[in-house]
Image (cartoon, rainbow, N blue to C red):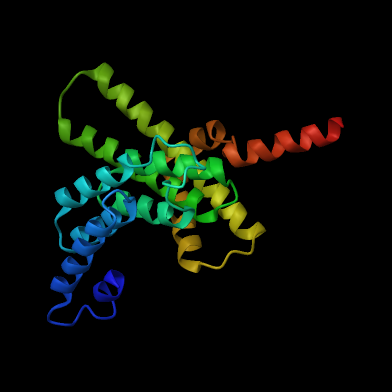
Length: 221
């Protein structure tokens, strides 16, 4: 219902008040469930109240992040995909990547998880580059370390995005916007890294490595 008031019924005069009421009721009914907190964060993001959104997201993650995957308190896969998007919207890329790395360990055939992980790491590299540009003169050794870390992050982003595109084709996935954006990001990363990035980044990523290992095991049997 909250999503309905935030989208189709957002033009209603009392839409925001209805959202607040529904979220408050959900938190009262299930205070120890992460989903209502995640919904609260979504509402706060739409209201341009990022600090409150980040607080809600952090509380939501704390409820399950240290639990085993099979624990019933861990949100389902789709809910955690949505969570990773909210975390990225709120500028919490480190936490988003933590969620996405766990998701690809649970299911390495998820196009969306690989795509979001690649996009997330692209944003992390951008933040590092922007921080360097804004610092002016500083410790050269530290700057070099940050620049090297940003470059490594870009290479990892490219690997994740290329894995998502390979799965996209393999699984005949249908989401043109995802595909176009992933291809756009890969193109930007290749342009940024240049030839050196192509050579050093020739590793095709975690998903392909796992596939190669499976092939070797089959050949050895």
